[in-house]
Image (cartoon, rainbow, N blue to C red):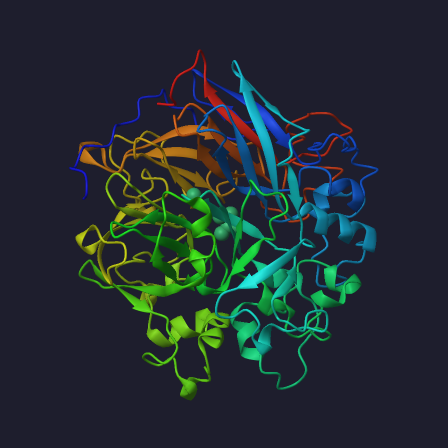
Length: 591
Ligand code: FEO
Ligand code: CA
Ligand code: CA
Ligand code: CA
């Protein structure tokens, strides 16, 4: 049952000043430790990082690039000893490699990308499992841990669920349609109560070059996912990333991947029942009937909010019994009505318009083209759904809608009320009867983001929110053990807002609802990722993604000339995306 209003504690830390410079900053009374930088050794035999002598072989033994989601799995219920998992979402070749510069120019794309550099990128993608231990205030990496693992865009994985083994999933390297190499562009994610890590493949379209043969059946499918605008040169050197040679390969990406971090030999599973789109994340909750419910955003302008409800209930006594629970269940897409009600529409082959008339012959077809199925059902077209989290305290669901500068006034609706929505908004949903499996819900806009002092922006933070407290572009989020919402941002920068991205604490209940306070900010060029608390709220893991990246001028930031050399600040070191941990000086919960 839902907790009463006011049950959630308010924040009482002293607010950080908003701004932007080359370093990170945290609220007074807290300290930060850099835990894992790009290239840091994570095994006893890992080579030290040398940016001018990097190789794929070395990278496979080192921490990867651009962590987005991070999670922490306690060992023996400890808040000071456990496994950190991190997604390595994407690579910035202009910042990683000397002399390369930006490679996505129309004139001569990828001219300077060699096979060696591409192979480093492939090894820097994926994810990592790293055992950590805290002694006093200091955390350290346990390099000789039996659990430490690098997963890359080349690691063998298994496709499971309704789309596994389908004709459209088969390639020349895989006649089974169920074995795939690697995961790519893994953005946010989640941890399940049965001890697994869910990792969400997001912008997979940028990894494929080439054109499909004329009239190929996947033409509309790939167009709906924006393939055809490559951001990486991988297909120049690896045929599977060239759709003219391997037309089905993209169907094997764009899924939720489940990994058991406590089993270093675990073959990661791509759970196709959860749909295929640009998955932002996969945070879930055990429903009151015992089933598991995962809310999911599809991060694209005008795309959708989804949820998946398992068929089986979670076995809380036997973790291993849940390992295949995500292979059977129902995927739904959301419709937000103007009166504050909403409906979850099932994405099930044979129901509604999801039939042969519309080109679907099976649930596999429906899942491979989840977006088209949701289009046909008339789901509500949202302003880029990013992370979604659910409060176990109140059953309320928070949806980050990051921005949508393409929304015209005539397309504004109740759930996406602003034209040219530069700063995004957050929607709060409450499932009918506190039942996350219900097909009805109520919703309202919790806050419209942006600077409340500029009337045209139309921001709706509470009047108690200071000039430091407002934010734009909500992206990742987390709910702490007290049920409080923390929002990380992506897209604030000197040109847009005069402030860096960071972490804000947003009140959701009682008189302070809509009041936001600034807690942490990243160095120039970076976005704020993570965030994840240990169960006692005494340690907050954060990821600083792409520090030093271009701000407004796309050609301005390179290996030679980044916006910052955070966190090493050495002329010989490029900026290095890193995972950090925040603790309270003298100990105690982050308040
Ligand atoms: Fe990878 Fe939607 O952010
Ligand atoms: Ca994100
Ligand atoms: Ca999250
Ligand atoms: Ca992002």
